Length: 439
Image 1: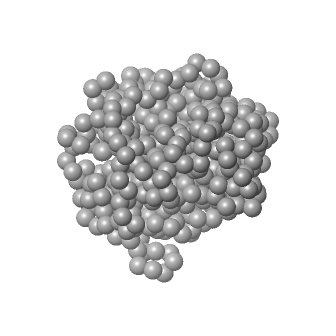
Image 2: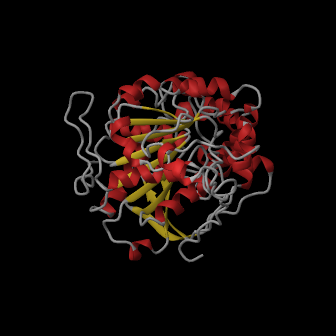
Image 3: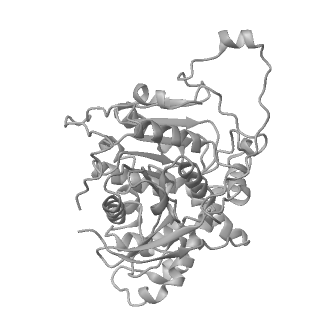
């Protein structure tokens, strides 16, 4: 049964607050007047230091990754031909890329946010909850019905107004893709209609969104990109729903939430913890009436006055989703445990110095053994930063080009789906087969 839309109305994302805490809370991080206006690109001049004759002898193979990038995965040989720029060194923007916190905060405050005119569709879920889908206005009339559809999953408390989300939307839409931002319950001004938000392990809403989008565009391939907590949810979803998505990308995924929680409460990271906690408390406050009579193990006062994400999750999140404790919630919501079961082409991109998604939480061995997965680790990048490449420092993250290379490679049918490592028949990712969704 396909969920029925509540309503659809023109939507303009909320303006960004100038308050420091609110800005920092967009670590899932921040900001298309007549369709789309491309962001002003800040290009550095091309270097011509080497003679042309020498270049023909020394230029690396286009599909041989540069040593500055760590690239592993069972699908390494299969997917490397997708990329046109991995042979170049990863070069962080001067000064900004030298410190992971500076890069993370700069990207949040100062990265340009493209304008977009979006149309909001509110989707009622089976439990009477609501999520908001933001589409590029007019695309249902402009794009062919079989145009590939890209579903974007922002990070914790994030939504369609965040700059990293907008840049990815721009990049994909300019290549003819239909893009929709999946704003989780309470995020991006999404309405809250039940006393439940969302969690790192809850894939019910993702299941219904994919089913709805697939029914709306039955002749299109569906793809997904997730960041941070959205990436964790996406990988958990892929492990359980292998035949609904043609390909996916995970960025800045915390993977192991136990490790991420440990690091989140250390040193400068407490600044991020406080900012995200304030954002969660604000969402709860805006819908407090729904939670007034919650009894049992719920501790709404603790969540409403939480000093950390951990306290908020202890008071509300873990109870909502049936976990015995916040530690039980974290340990059983790790996408690091799910990735071995992913049978969909999956690209993971992480920064070695990410303060919120620690490198020690990356499931290297499981990715290495999964014939459907590829992992790229950059030496710098912070969390949702990646201020590098031709558009740095104010334009799109370095990752956007890599993501689109991968997705377009899959859409072109250039690679054949590998056989499942679990011994079952591999999923066929053709342009005809992926829209048959089961709910």
